Image 1: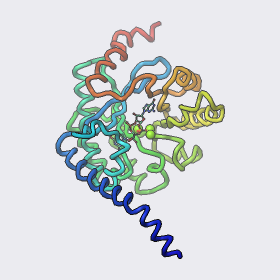
Image 2 (image 1 turned 90 degrees about the vertical axis):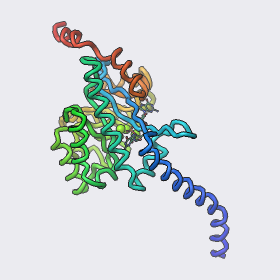
Image 3 (image 1 turned 120 degrees about the vertical axis):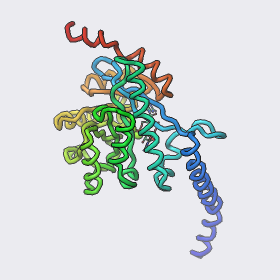
Image 4 (image 1 turned 90 degrees about the horizontal axis):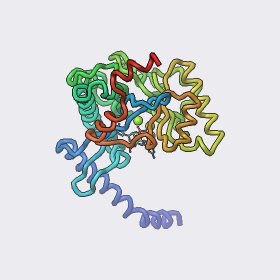
Length: 291
Ligand code: C2E
Ligand code: MG
Ligand code: MG
Ligand code: MG
């Protein structure tokens, strides 16, 4: 009876499993080619100073221009890249491309160039090869000052694992900063925030999106901001989509914000135009303190 039940289940699920295995295998092969054929590119989402709305930097996000399927978002291939060991090369591409782009912008846009570059790092990248050496190479080859680079890691990644902590300290020793991405979605708690070697806490979009309708979420955001501040960490709110959300995060004294309300992730050329329109000229910055 159990055997038959198992058999029946097997019949129902086998085609799906086969389909998924096929999809996975085919995506892996295509992704391998995408990296070498230059189908990957980087989009940039501006990060603004919530006190004055000025652009301060951008998060680099990877995209795949697939020959048949069009633009593929990272949710469809990052995990596969991690599982197949392709994440190392993918990460190397994003990092070196984004660093070079920021240095080009510094030359082309002058005082209107964004300063802070934030790049995502996934768990597998910390274990594949020497990540600190890889980052050091990207900085050296591009000429981007380490102080302008921020690497985003997730909570699960920053948790109490000695090997991970050692890697994170190696990275910080390069002179860059670390941000804790998607805070609130993982397993670590506010109480353990002080154990993590991070400079910045990014409040996850799921909290921001409920901040207008839910007092509970506002309290959680406020508590997170207070603890982060008390530890000397800076704060960024992710996924701000409305005026109301931006007002709440400002009132709660979150330092920076990011989200569709300000700007969507954009290809480099569009991002450059956006920065020219939103980063004040050097003179304006100089005048501001006197007002
Ligand atoms: P993340 O690092 O938390 O990035 C923020 C994600 O939220 C991005 O999705 C961004 O497009 C989206 N987003 C920003 N503002 C809003 C908003 O107002 N509303 C909504 N609904 N979404 C918003 P994206 O680009 O699809 O990236 C998804 C995730 O994939 C990233 O989450 C990150 O974990 C990962 N990822 C992206 N690029 C890379 C990369 O180069 N390397 C690694 N390791 N992971 C990456
Ligand atoms: Mg991120
Ligand atoms: Mg995030
Ligand atoms: Mg996220």
